[in-house]
Length: 58
Image 1 (spheres, one colour):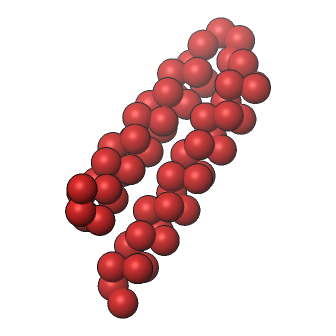
Image 2 (tube, rainbow, N blue to C red; image 1 turned 90 degrees about the vertical axis):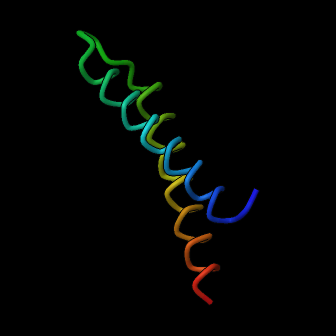
């Protein structure tokens, strides 16, 4: 898998996590632990995308 393909896969996962966060927030009683976990995963992926993007530009 090329770096570009990996970045695209991470972007898809990031979007999926965003959707999961939105779904959890629309529940009558959102689970704070679940939201926290999803947000941490999303942030980790965002950081990885930024790192890979920066590495491919040098």
